[in-house]
Amino acid sequence: SSTSYSTVLNAFARASGKNGEYGGMRAVERARDIYDRFIDRVRDGNVVCGERGEANDSYANCCLLNCCANVYGTGTEKKEALIIAINAFEEMKKHPELHGTPNQYTFGTMMKVCSRLSSDEREKNRLLESIFVQACRRGHCSAAVFGQFLRNTAAQTNARVILEMGGTKREIPHSWHRNVSRRQWPTPVGGESHRGNDNAGY
View 1 (tube, one colour):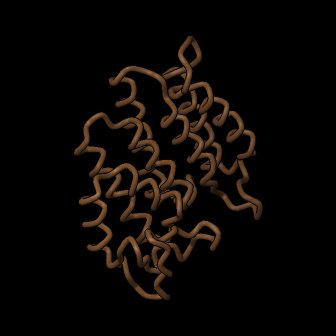
View 2 (view 1 turned 90 degrees about the vertical axis):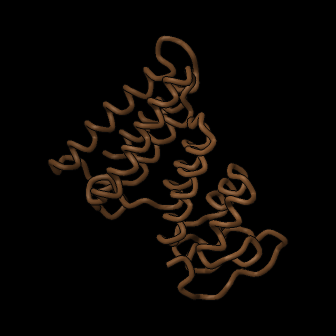
């Protein structure tokens, strides 16, 4: 089942944060191999995912991304893990019937990936901006996504992006988090209320 694969991927996510024979990039590479095997079985109809028996499961993809985010290693190894994560994220968007549909956990984990693994500040800001914009447009801007974007980008950068998207740090459009449960809605800076149902961010 998809749960069995996700459990194994989570074990590698814990191992990737450690040095040693089974840690670091070795754990990431093994996790990627297992994830590829999982997708092959989903494609062949040999794995049923989700509570309703749907043919995809975004959780397994998130486990692989988390494995990359936790990697212990050199700058080169972190760059390699970043590339693996970006490729997995892009494949998910191209083939949701296999990998599942990106949700707030996907975007939040990708933010963690980019903030931890990108060694170049300009690259990190560019990647985080892209992920944040995609999360807002898909209605998956959770408190975790919003918070990570504010913490890991320069104030002038996140202020510009938020304004260009039609919101402010004090007034967050409902459309940005329309697919997120209320308890995970982002908290406006200063405690202002959320803006009502509108089309901001499109």
